[in-house]
Amino acid sequence: MALNTSLPVLIVDDYQTMLRIIRNLLKQIGFTDVDEAKDGSEALGKLKEKKYGLVISDWNMAPMTGFELLQKVRADAELNALPFIMITAEAKTENVVAAKQAGVNNYIVKPFNAETLRSKIAAVLGE
Image (cartoon, rainbow, N blue to C red; front, side, top):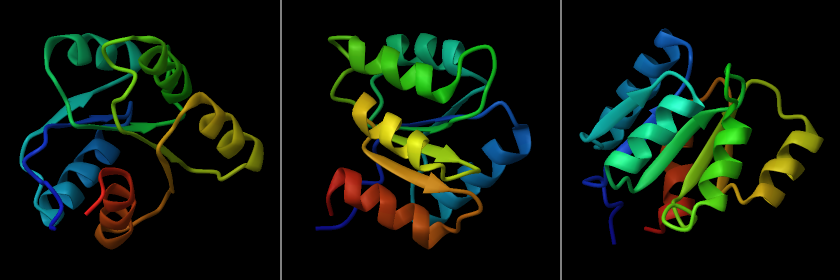
């Protein structure tokens, strides 16, 4: 079974260049329905408006971090089963543990390529 690339994906990062990079990598893998949010609060708003199949969020953002976004998503009855992948620049063990405990589905450390992204998504969505 191939990856279901028709799923709508929401990417969340406060850095425009990173959003563009992730969007391009997703396009390489075959995802075409990709929306962007600049921070956790904007992302939450979009998650309320549209049904996404996957969220890929940066950890370090202001005013709401990716970790806080993850906690809010997991605490929301309508969103709590949403596949969530966290992107971070530093793979601190305590961050990984905290994210796992908060219910993150997978974790990507920057920098990464399309193949890494694809395998992480495949691990979350199941091929």
